[in-house]
Image (cartoon, rainbow, N blue to C red):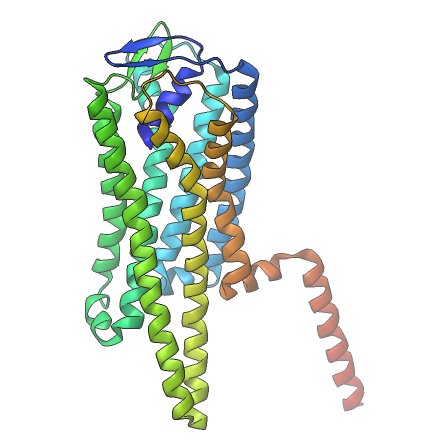
Length: 348
């Protein structure tokens, strides 16, 4: 995915770069690219604000202690959004690149490798959350031993950063170059086959495998929850049933939230992966069109929709956000005043 994204962005300069077997050109008008960059920049700013607000709500509701990986997921989304803002602000400046500074600006910023670093880390962390939910529901006794220590959670968080960083850095530097002040990321390949192999590995590792983890784990979780519901119905003891029902509600609420987030990732990134696969396999030059811009914008918008899911589906976050609404505060204060006044009158 990432290598084609960088190649496509570079192609919008309107120049032709011959890199072995890969020749890339574009006939797309500059106007489309400019409006696309503006749209992504605006979306990134909105995403940054929304993710920051949700991250605050997670911390304010003490969820950073109960659901560490979920808070880490939102932090990754926030960082990725910040990267997107920096990247597209720099692109709109149309900087002439020279020297070592220009090269690093090309490889780290204009290539969008920072954004892909955060995106892939976010995906890996999302898979870690799925596995964590799976272990806690399907193997509740064993999970206390496996997940009872904080180092396992921190190991999963560190793995997301390291794997994503390695996957991006290992390919961006040897395949990028600066020529005539322009950035050509992911374009210097020894042969076309190597480029296709890298894309297939990327696609299988960060899309197919991730979706398999989502489907398998949440399918098993739903099977166990239904089985527990039947057992509770057969042994309906009043006291224990109420406590167990409350616990199941919290567990189900978290699972529903993560299922929606996972499904959204699957849908949002599918058009982009299909598009990049087709242009990787195509022997003809690449011509940017609305298909690319539409699929890329949908993929970037994924980070913007996550905060709204947490805000509407995750009860602790919802309660904090509701308290922050001005007219809600006024309404609640008025209710408290009425109650206090009523209590005073009764005492009189």
